[in-house]
Image 1 (tube, helix red, strand yellow):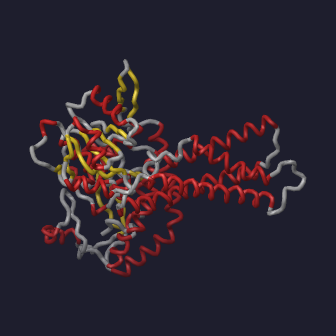
Image 2: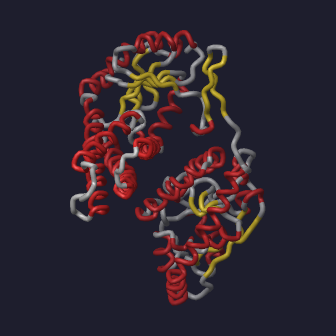
Image 3: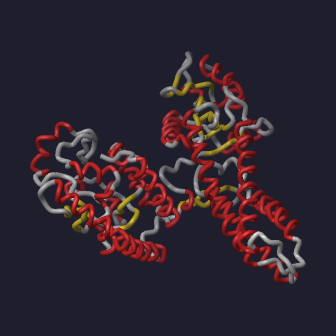
Length: 483
């Protein structure tokens, strides 16, 4: 094992950081629930005691807070495996609150207990929203702490073949906020060199024969097993036995790339946990609902944005000559071409100037991107920074050519050079925003942009769309990758 790995192990902070974060969440949840219940009481009774009521609200209010916290505990809302990443944390918080509300309503009706429905309704509504908002704020602080380092991430020992370990390292580093930091690797015996070696900047600390020892030496609290021909079911089962009681978690990363959790189902068959991967869904009721929501939101958005659209149009007209709206042919679902609408942000002869600027392209692949593009007007630079130039695309969504969320709408020249895999982007409608928008926009490489688009095509869901729309506001406000 390399000496730097051993040195890093001695410098790691205790695992108590995770427990401290959970304790802080309990305090935060208790505060939110206390305020919600107290607010419900004030809203229902106006600060006066509930005269004429046999219900002792002075005891009911704190009792409700305690039972609510117990409900969150039962729903495993403090499980560190779901904290800080994914939508499962929010789902559990919401489920725990709603189930408690339903239980109290049923028990109150059966027992004929006259607790004020207004008090309960206001308390549960405010408490549920407050819990989700507080968890979101706490998660942002946790992500910032993980980005700074200092022991807020799990220390991972990656186990598997060289190629799969490198892929796992790349995947986890792509999303550091998830809280997994690879600090060492174990590879098959046949691949070990007589001298210490590294996989990139990850030290190789042992073989499959010494996984528990290697985890202890480098201070890993998680062993992540990826694909390898030498890791049989028997060896993996024995590894689980060896890690029992050590405080080290064992996770298995299946050799499935870019397949989201909702499509993966584990079903025991003949004693084997078979992983079933469902086919992507490109039609049906969910697609109908998505289309209905797209049109309803785009219609409302256009109506509300009319004053802003008028101001932007006037500013463009005063800034430079040319039309206000720029119409460009793009390729949509099924390879059908349509005209996408945007506010004009460039000079009128921008296409003619492209050949002269081709050598200054700052991105790879089929796109042209340039941070200081001389073709962009003064007003256009402002519109691009805040993504206001894309507001007219609400009309494309209303007409059914685009969706609110989807892959980036490509140019016909790009589609002409697509290979078989990239062409799968055309199985769904392009979107005003998407994973590419919330992951860096123009800062992304061509390969990463395609990967994100294909991931969305294969794994889209209504919940994912809502998450992307929420994250889009943060990406726009932060102006990440906008130029």
